[in-house]
Image 1: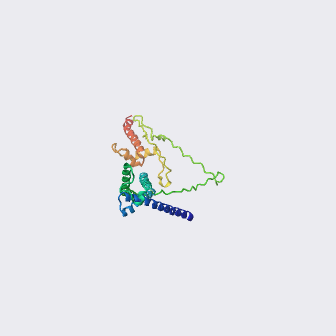
Image 2: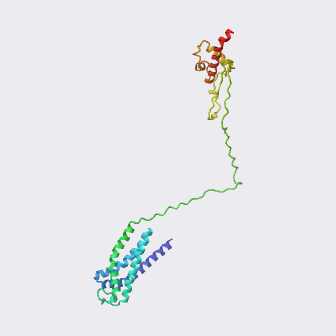
Image 3: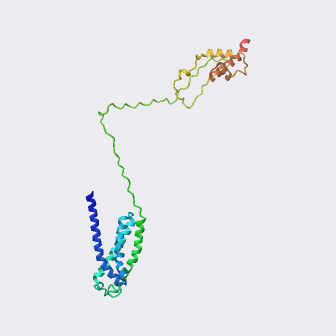
Length: 285
């Protein structure tokens, strides 16, 4: 790494030395051209910095800028001023009078159209340096370098093992028990045989939604009272409602008296009402 840095530093120093010597050679020609177009001694001394200095500025801007359009603009400025400096150096070599300063003022070529073009080129370079140099500096100052995205390295820690390396085989998944589409309709048990004169029908309520299967009721929640048969319920209802009137003989009253379900209470009510309605007929017979 240290050797690499030294090599880069030596390359940069060599480039600076070559550019400095090339600027010294071009500086002599551009100074004489500036004197020929009417510049004084101070302006002629600074004239090479205007042309070749902008070339260096455009080169730096090309290296710094990352936007494609800005980089293309900096390259065009560099190419234009390089070509202009080359033309003026070429004219300096063709006109020996420029070396001694004995050329007529404003005369860079014997042919008038060529002379006008050369004078226009030499006098427009300082103005172009002000415009293009300011634009390049503004682009560099407003330039925001693109930060490289962080490189994330993913380490694959997964290990591949053969079936013989495993301690035990993976148990097969337990299939889920298939639930029935719908539970069967509840079985309706008639508590008593309906009387012939007044038949009693018990209709089970059908539900569109299947009932959920519940767990087993714990022993502590079960009732301590033993289950009663239909005949026992009917006997209790008869004894409890013996002195009731027909209006008081309701399913809710029977349910509270014998402590049974609403469905059985309705069956008991209909049975007791049927017995009361047939009692006078039996007595007359």
